[in-house]
Image (cartoon, rainbow, N blue to C red; front, side, top):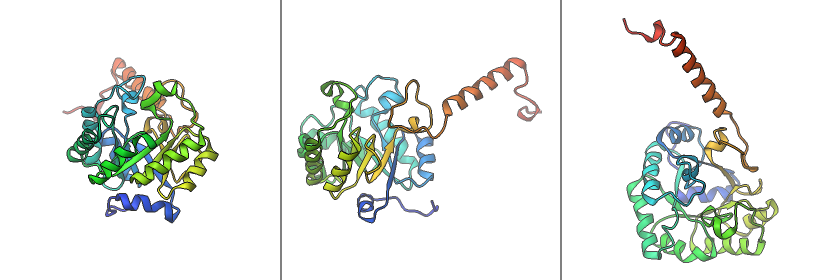
Amino acid sequence: MSSDARQITVPQFTAMKQSGRKITMLTAYDYPTAGLLDSTGIEGILVGDSLSMVVQGHSSTLPVTLDEMIYHAEMVGRAVRHALVVVDMPFPSFHLGVHKAIENAGRILKQTQCQAVKIEGGMEQAEVIAALVTAGIPVMGHIGLRPQSIHQLGGYRVQSDQQQLLADAQAAEQAGAFSIVLECIPAEVAVRVTQSISIPTIGIGAGPGCDGQILVVNDLLGLTPGRVPRHVRAYADLKNTIAQAVTRYRDEVRQGTFPGKEQTFQ
């Protein structure tokens, strides 16, 4: 990425579908990580409510608050110069009526340097999406597996109701969403959904036929404790790299070899 590259706008992001350019997105939750990701030239960064799990250690995305999302989004927005930055609206910040949803989404845009919000849902959230867009707040939709509705869905399961997914995607587009995340749906269904709408689809566990892909950065870097989801490919093994580095540091301190002459002032 050239140093003078301008930040991607919402219309430019949406236009990538028509140009056939695949869109790459990752999550970020802090300033240094966001800066590193942005320097690679990826097109989008999501401040995901997944921080509830991968940063805060909760078992779901439900506990994270709007104030906490804004706190992390402010750090990310300050670091990014190129990518489009989208912020998850946490549960239940967009379920409290359209006026409250606008107020909450407005806080995100006013208090951070981010450009858009993401909300989970299709048909049932069309009114909220339309209200936010009318207020000048760009919205990314999210259908398929919706982690905020995990109790209602009965667990983290593949969502394969093609008619419902098509209806959700089309409703989100008609309401004004500029793109839609497709999470954990069969690849063939994801292709049909992608072909049925004019805005980009961003897949996670939805096969290669989407207009773009997103992963949780901790999963990509091999920092996830325990079992890695099937739809993830770890591109590094930082968990072991960090553990080895800390173990070496611990041993050298105990042995008296750190700090050495190079790290000591005379």
